[in-house]
Image (tube, rainbow, N blue to C red; front, side):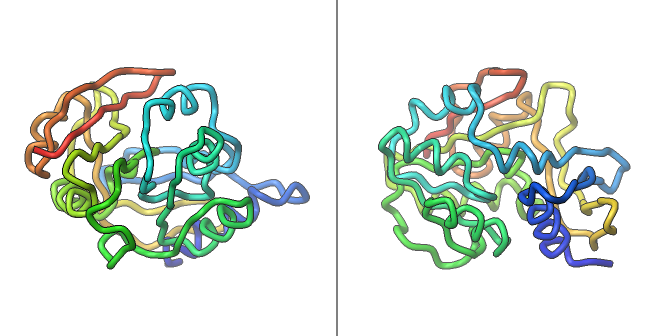
Length: 216
């Protein structure tokens, strides 16, 4: 089995090189559900949906699982300071190589700006990080200031909320299993409350589901 970060990093490098054609990459959940990993979209600029989404986000912003940094660049273009954190050294190198602020690390590590972030982002399914959304939200709550807000992307109403295991699959190999979770917008209130937040808004935009959370 290939370590997940290695396989993900190799995929990003291939997808970022015009001379190579990167094959499809996907996330397979333990129950057999397949979730595409659109590396090409991650490497592009934020699309119209994401630019509209970020208009109301106020800095300083912590982007959790920032990937190659398209949300960081979009926020910078809006005049907002943002810092990304990601476990993948390749993703962080791609983000910083394009001028974004990003560091290699886990959201559960010691991070700069504790208690001073005005906003945090959990987009592209990153509510699944660590397999326990309640623990993840509680951790983010310690990093935000008292009036801080969290913008989170959720799965559609048909999705079953669950903590599970996942692995990355591509034409280059299969990774080992790691903890992951999916959260349906239908279970937003319960999950937010378990993590010390309250949901004040949820909406659909561009076929995707989002919510704004505030500390309780």
